[in-house]
Length: 145
Image 1 (cartoon, rainbow, N blue to C red):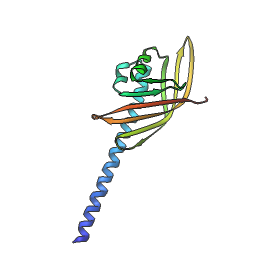
Image 2: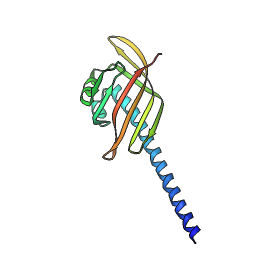
Image 3: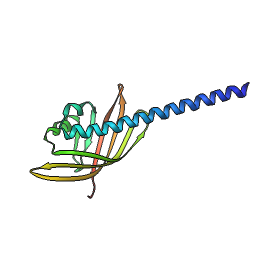
């Protein structure tokens, strides 16, 4: 009978492990969809939508090295020149209540009457807080076309 109890315990632990993996997969998929929602909100200058994605303690390092907090970042959105931002090759790694997303992006826009295309890489850090995923830190680096 002792062997049977061990089998049940092992099966239960395996089930819990699979459940945890499913939860992590679900969370990473959710955060990846939030990354795309962020791009849409930024392209449409939707500050309200962005407020719902960024933690109160959010910090941002731009490709030129400029640093801003949440309110500074949001204040710049209405003046943005982006018309489309597309993420490529995103990868999300879960660390429990924290998910780190890395990837590349293409940004198109118009600045002073001239169209532009930028390419870069990014790292975003998300935390699960009060039942929702919020970005706490974002960093961009430009790359060659």
